[in-house]
Length: 166
Image 1 (spheres, one colour):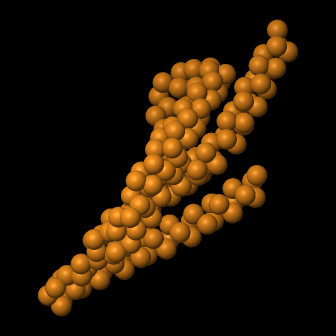
Image 2 (cartoon, one colour; image 1 turned 30 degrees about the vertical axis):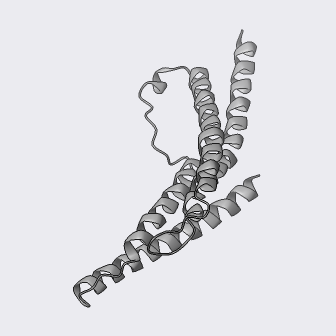
């Protein structure tokens, strides 16, 4: 599983780097055509908007998988170690449910609804842009399931330690 995670991480990293470089290039082209040529390129704004959407939809699960997401731990740090693990399990289950229902289920419906629509400037199918949502959901599920298993293992270990002490 760790090898699969490393491969997925590497693929996401490469895509994110390509997107950032492409966005910088498109932004430069937009500035160049506007101020040097006197007529702004019409495709760059749409490209950067959709590239940012994909960057976000790939960056969120990537950061989550690396445990680099934003977390407010003020309240959680007041719990016992077992309480923290139970809280973590609850959070992971909520993330899994939301990923499955909202992102995969809802995102798939949105992408299917966009069939036949074409973007104005790039003339690309709109479903391509909306596919980022269910893909993000799939990646979140991919990263969440091992985290849930790990938390359950820690909870079981903590409970067994507590029984041994008694």
